[in-house]
Length: 427
Image (tube, rainbow, N blue to C red; front, side, top):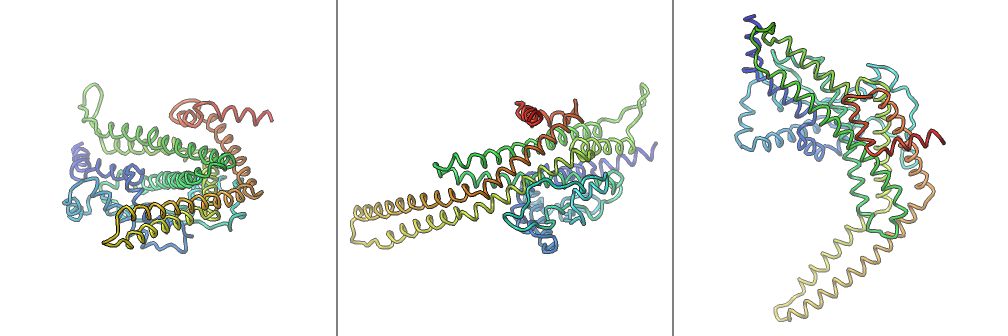
């Protein structure tokens, strides 16, 4: 009993188990939102490449910079970076994080665990109409890891536990990546909304994007708030509970109790995040991949219409015209005349903008009225609706109550998906 008590004191006090677990939550469970944004802002272009073209050293550099920036901002003190460098290797600290690239995608890894996931026939629309199919990218294989977890923290954060954390990280990271891509499409669509005469024709694209964004954002909110946060608070409450005296048949907390509490947290979180259910994770993967393919098509569509190029050229011309007018001012000229000249320049730019608006309307109109674009949107609508219906039916079958039931409520709060399933079944 004395040895167990001493080990508990070492874990909680000297080796700061709570801080180590908090580090795992901040980075592996993406609790630190600014870290995710800093890292993707720097590394997104690199991670979009096929795996064999990625510079691991560059990604590690971006990761280290993002961690340093995040930790400095979180602490708010310059001395924090000095304190980090003075910490010994007996504690688990963010600067020890390393980037790792798995040899297989998340779906392939889950298939090796449960079987029957990767061998299903793909029903998502092909990339072929707008480009060739791609190999696994950095986003498919990226993971975080600690090269070494110091003892005795490694009793709790064992290799098995670390594998579970990495599995959760890859799942959350990929879902967050899909959300970020869909938000980018939303931003592109705001630019297209200025083409008032085409809003009706663009309506199906806008609606499909919003349905996808609604699904992904509610999935992420469910996993982060309903699952991770609730389970985490429950775990920490149990770990930090004051030691019980051996009264009323109770005993003091031991290391085995800590291990049991932590393993219970990971098991419940993996289960609620659908990672232990092959059929649900299969359907979810299809939906997320369909969303990614849709964002790829929308990016190609925006590149084809050259909306941003036209806007940048017009803005540059306007700035140049104003600057030339300012440079032409002489000391003897009357200010009113300069204002009139500037007004004429701005009027000319406005006319050019109207001409550009009409040209963009014709160009975008030709693209969205083309048969290939219509078929592409219809195909995405068909596949997304079908896979969402399958996912919801499986979810309702597996979860009559409990935490996972809240995901069904989030996704179908007004009964729209349920009514769509009924219509599809009756058709």
